[in-house]
Image (cartoon, rainbow, N blue to C red; front, top):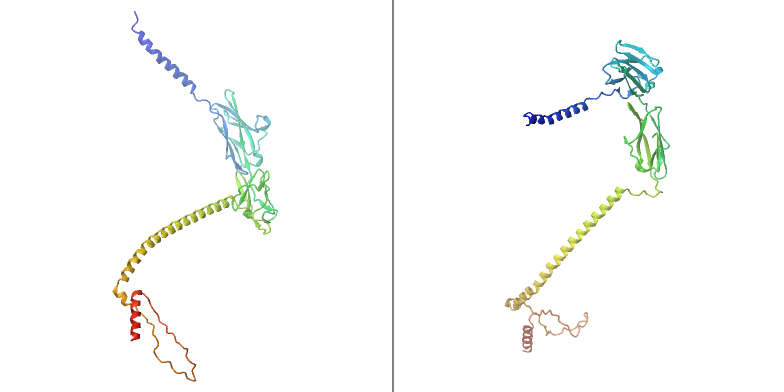
Amino acid sequence: MESPSAPAHRGCVPRQGLLLTASLLTLWSLPTTAQLTIESVPPNAAEGKDVLLRVHNLPGNLGSCIWYKGESVKNHLRILSYAADTQAITHGPAYNHRETIYPNGSLLFQKVTLQDTGYYTLLAIDKDYESKEVTGQIRVYQPVGKPVLRASNATVTEHKDAVVLTCLTNDIGISIRWLFKNQILPHKDRMKLSRNNSILTIDPIRREDAGSYQCEVFNPISSSKSDPLELDVQYDPTLPSPGLSDGAIAGIVIGVLAGVALIAALVCFLHIRKTGGASDQRDLTEHKPSASNHSEGLSDNSPDKMHEVTYSLLNFSGQESKKPTSASPPPPATEPVYSEIEVMQPALLTTQLTDSKSHLHH
């Protein structure tokens, strides 16, 4: 017969497994010992300033710590040593009376010089005689002086001459950059720099290169610019004009296309307007003859219009011819009489002429 406690025992097995897993995870997640490090404050120091090599994560059961100049532990390079129990400080062969060691292991340098630049090694020994070694670095710089800019020729001709600009400086451990019109000079295919950037060559020169040039020397703690140098680039009319830039060509193409589109739109507008005007004129012409014929029909049958017609009849001269005088030449045999006849009604005109002849006979 199964014991009553058996089911309860089986139910505890998963709980024990979870406890074991939690224990293992706790062991794996235990914080590891922090690594011993050195920090330079400031990272880049000016000559004559103080620099502190600050130590981080020094062992809690520190027995002693020793500083060495360089990247290795050598007795002749020992600077200072400190004993935690007695707080005793011992000077080494590399000590120069400007270093100070603190109980937390940090090392202070007062009024550093360029010779202080380099690596420094700390040896930390705990009370169990276990040692740790770490290396730090000091960087010391001098403030840079003002450079001088020289040009092979300050007045040059476009597409004909080359220019060589030289930046002169007595500083070491510095970097050099070039400025054009107080902006960083953009690099172009026509420009070449020497290995240390102290010499700038522009070949060939162009009018766009004319302007103010400067060189600037700098290091992590300071910088200085030369006086501006004005470069005058003249144009030689005997040389062919330079080709257009890509931007200018693109602008011309866009302008031409816009002009063509505008002309095409104008021509289309004029054509539509002309076609519409001709159509209106044809419609007006088609309606005009009928209106004219209608008016003529009305005028021909109008009695008022018939009375407005005037006639001029031929007048036959019935007067006797005058006798010629000695002072006047004889008149011509016949003197024609001109009359103006406006013919509007041919039938009426014939009737009037017949009546006129009958009247003359009588």
